[in-house]
Amino acid sequence: MLKWALIFLVISLVTGFLGFSGISAATAGIAKILFYLALVLFLIFLILALMAGSAVV
Image 1 (cartoon, rainbow, N blue to C red):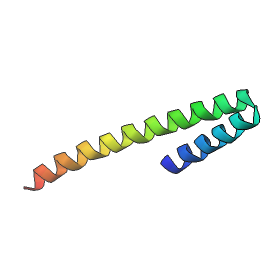
Image 2 (tube, helix red, strand yellow):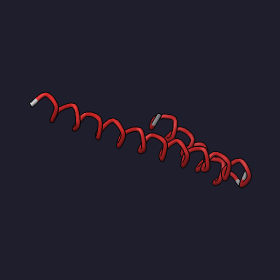
Image 3 (cartoon, helix red, strand yellow):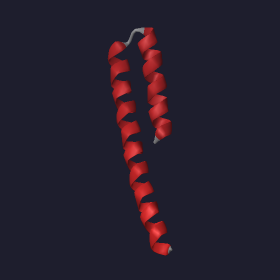
């Protein structure tokens, strides 16, 4: 998912450089959403792993 966020970020930067501000804003928004979604999933799995690790011990 972070890979897709980086791809959309690069697309946003390139289109912004070329002057396509509408496409640039849309792809930046998609990249932001994907990044935060990946961050939330990482935190959920981190908490689950810590809880499972303490249950084993």
